[in-house]
Image (spheres, rainbow, N blue to C red):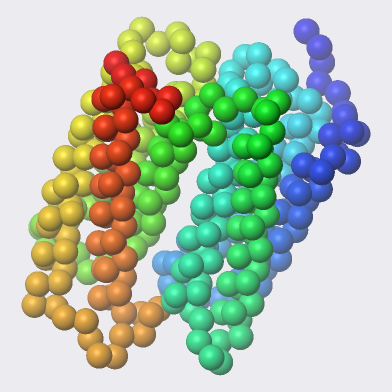
Length: 288
């Protein structure tokens, strides 16, 4: 077996330069966001986690490719090209959500820090989007699951679920809304389990059961749960609760509840599309 060794050509490639730009920009955004600081705000905490985690994962991927360790990973575990494309895609989505959040909740005419952080986050999003586009256009790179439509849809489902979970508010003392939280929480680990199992192809092939059949069951459960949340959340959040006249973006409970409602319908649509495509066995989706 060939031992891992350092590859200078990998370090000097355009891909590595793009990774370095991502690491630097996410690091700068993290520092600026930390100096600006809104430690009591959920969206600020979420954004700080994203800006801190993305450069760490990018650096780890760069080191693995620099020492050609990914060739061993390819043999024993998973499709490395598919995995890294999926990570770039997820990073682009997360940075996009941070940009939208900052722009929506923290920008005003006199909020210079809000403008600076939003612009920096947008640059991070563009850099990861460029990597995703380059990977998808590179015919030499494989796209077995995460970088293909079925995996991309699963990533979107998990991403939207995370946005919903960090936005939950105003549910105290309301059993119907607590049920909605259960409906949001249950599908997320199921979706992540499907993604991880399909990425780890060697493990998937060793399973004594069909992961595609389980995926179908998970999708049915997720659709039913989201249907219940799509009905209950808006009713028990907005009934007798019109939008206040004074509703500042970063502290208005009504606006945040609206975000949850909107994202609930988005994810319900994604799960329904996923279920229909899986039942029909089209566009790369496997029918059990």
